Each structure stands twice: as C-alpha cells, then as structure tokens.
Length: 438
Ligand code: TYD
Ligand code: MG
Image (cartoon, rainbow, N blue to C red):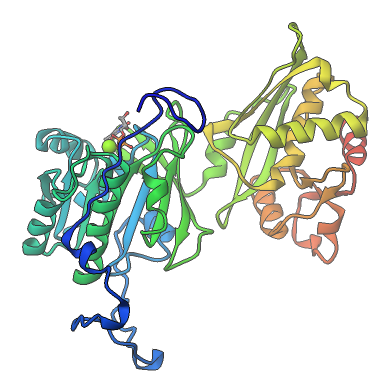
C-alpha cells in the first residue's frame, strides 16, 4: 500500500512478517484442556536457593560498578548507543583483557578487522574467541558447545533468525533474536551482552523495543567530537540505576576516568564572561562541570535558542524565569548554551550555574574562576534544595574553589566548619544577581 489511509502520508508503511508457527496454532485450544507435561511448577519462595547469583568481575572497575558489582550469571545485558561512540571497542577490550573463555560474535566486522582493533587496545591477551556469524541459531549452537564465560553479540541489528523471513534489523527479527538469546542466557546461565545501535533521537526500533526483555540496559553516550564517554544504567534488575562510568577514548582504547572534575575544569579561562561552574552529581559521583552561555542580540526576527548537553525546553523555562524575575529582555536575544566536554547533564542542580552563565554573558561581566554553583531553579525564581549537598560542597572544596552558591534550604543543618570554602546561601534569583554582580 502506498498511502496510509489513517494519516494520509505516503510510503510510510514498513513490512512486518507475522509468523504463524505450528506451535502458535496448537495453543489456540482452551487452557483447561492443555496437557503440557513440561510446565514449570510453583514453588515456595523460601525453598529457592539464591546461591547461584555469584557475580563475576570483568576487571574494568567502571564497568563492574555500573553493572552493580559485576556480572550476574544468566543476565541479558543491552548496551545501547549511537554508531561510532565506542560500544564495540568497550566490549572487545573487556573481552580481550581477561584470561577467561569469552565468545565475541560480530556480524559487523570481519575477524581481521576485530584483530586490528584488539591490537590497538592495551593489555590484550589472546584468549578471546571470535566468531563472525549473523544467524542466531548457528551462534547459539556454537555457544552451547563452547560454553563461554560470557557471550558478546555485536550487534543485534545484524542478527537474523531462520524462522523469520524479514531482513536483519527489522522489528520482528530483533524481537525473535533477542528472545532466543534470552532463552539461551536463562537456560545456560551464561551472561549475554547485546550491543544495539540507537539513532540520534534514541528512539529507533531497536534497543528501545528490547528494554523490557533484557535485565540490564546500559547506555553509552557522549559527543563523538569529544573524548569523554559516559556509561549510564537505564535499567538494572540486579543493582542500582544510580551508578555511572566515565571513560576517555584514547588511541589505545577506552580508559576509565577516576577524577572527572579535574579533567573537565582544566580549560577554564579566568576572565571570560559567560562561563560558570556547576557542582553536579552524576550517578553517585560529584563532578564539577563548566557551563557556557552566550547571549547576543538577535539579528533575525526569531531569536534562536540552542543547547548542547542540556534539555532545550528546560533552557527555555530558565530564560522565561530570568525574564520575568530579573527583567532581562531575553526575548530579543539569541541564547546559546554549552556544557563543556560534550557531556549531557541531567542533574537539576546545574540550573543555577546555567542562569549565572547567561546573566554573566548578558552583562558581559566575568564570574570569578573560584566560584561554583549548585541549585535547582523553580518557576517562580526560587532556588530549590538539591540532594547530596555535602558531597558537592566537599568536592568543590577539594578542588580549591573559594565560594559555592547553594539554596538556603540546603544549608540548614549543614556543618560548614569542616570546609574551607565559603558557602553562600540564597533563596531567590535576585539574591544570586546581587551576590554575584552588584
Ligand atoms: P566503535 O567501537 O567502532 O563504535 P560502535 O561500535 O559504537 O559503533 O568506535 C570506534 C571509534 O573509536 C572510532 O571512531 C575510532 C575510535 N577509536 C579510538 O579512538 N581508539 C581506539 O583505540 C579504538 C579501538 C577506536
Ligand atoms: Mg560497532
């Protein structure tokens, strides 16, 4: 069909083949008549032994932490990310750096290409098994005979199942292959890592439709033009989703970053307006990040707003608050916002630094390099409390900052005598403005 009769668009139909297997047809009979001998039985919770859930470590401290302390046997783990971000590099370096029996299956690269990549990463030992195959049945047959310590599939979009006629990467193929891998993982107790590509919007049929099937979803993100990569847990049946790993892409593979603040702040110039440092918490770790704002007179009718590493809608909201509370006529100005290092920040405590960088650029007055910020901005211009304030203040203090602006709700009950840094509590945007620029 060329045109959709519901929305009127042309050529928007995609083919999805529904397989009517023998199995499905027989299951139409009433459930009361079903005599499936191999059905599993209900057992009391207390009688189940949990001794088998011993986690194994991969040797990569960031990766183990993100997984919640190592790999759980039989876990199905999805690693999603944009093409070229480093998913294959990450999994290959984990696979080749340990002397375990690991099966790395690639449908994207030839064995020679994988070898070339492996030669690049440091600490490479030759024990990992490489299989270039795309048929999921073949892969699982091999895996059953090899019995690896874990299995890596690169990537789910290249796999095909013989039971489905549609092309690799289609929704039905992805679902069928993932279901086979899940059955394999649960029955054999061998952990399976699945790499999946997502597009820029992060929503293409691929990893998103797998999220409910897998036990853990890790997202590998970052800007390809920068070297930092963040590994976030979006879902974890066996651990917290608060953890996060930071890597740096180097010529010898991905290197874990243990002190992100120091790297992200090193390029701060003292006397430029439009820059402010935020004391954020990513995962469970404090991280000081520079935010940069640029406010310039709009030349064309519609003022532009653009944000890199930050939600554009939230930026628009902050601009509206600034306009309403401080009377800045930002409606006539273009506003650009950038988070240094190509890192995407979700912590609301970055609001205060963003507002400060915008005011600083608007007024063309630089903020001293030893000042930082941690606070969320509400719709009426109030500065709201943020979590883990002590950790933020401590990190800022450790890095030699002299002042930190926080919400007055945060300073109640906070023991400040431990810190050298001056903690300035404010309750409204107006206080920030007066404290900084007047
Ligand atoms: P890759 O792992 O192929 O990405 P994905 O599997 O997510 O598509 O990422 C490859 C990029 O990383 C590529 O642009 C080259 C770069 N790279 C390095 O900078 N250093 C290295 O040691 C390796 C192996 C790759
Ligand atoms: Mg790849």
